[in-house]
Structure formats: C-alpha cells, structure tokens
Image 1 (cartoon, rainbow, N blue to C red):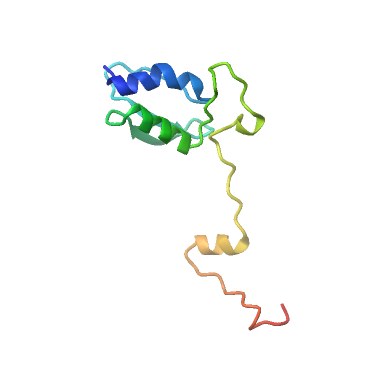
Image 2: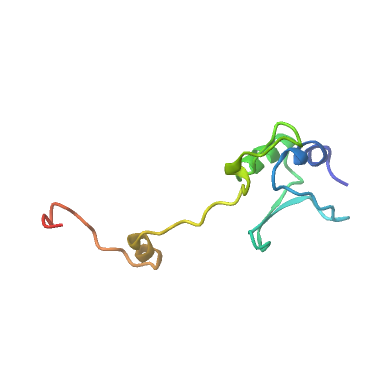
Length: 113
C-alpha cells in the first residue's frame, strides 16, 4: 500500500502533469521511472520516503509541465516536455569529450586568427 504522501501525489497531482503516467504494480514500492523517447529506461527514483511536496518539486525539476487543471491545454513549447533536445557539440567540445584537451585558441598568441 502507498504511504499517504505518495498516494496524495498519485491521485491529486499526477493528473496535472503533462506526459506523466501512473502504472500500478501490485506489491511494488512506488518509484518514478524515467524513460527515453524510445521508452528505454533511463533512471528509477524511489518515492516511498519522499513527501508529496518533495515529489512535486522533483517532477518539476525534471522538466515535467504542470497544468492548472487536468484538462488545461499544454503550451506548444511543452508538448514534448520533459524531453530535452540533444546537445549539439562544437568541434572543441567533441574533442574534449574523448578525453583529449583541445588546443587553446588565444588571440594574443595568434594575431592572424
């Protein structure tokens, strides 16, 4: 059985969030399961020890859009929330990502650049 804080979140708050679904699994501890756009599991966050306010804060920090009422329209910019666009790497960032430090670009040393 769900603790009262989690139960209040499930029954009263989930309907206000866009792209947030409740799946009841009998006997399972309540947890937030984050999925990719391909429905691949990204992370599981246990909710049992959290208050309703903490769960709401977490869900909003993760980027879920909270509507005023369950049937309120969702603004265009939040239609795919909490999905974030893939980061675009500059060539220097791509080099840094492989563990090698990109060469410095100091205009004082290279006045011709």
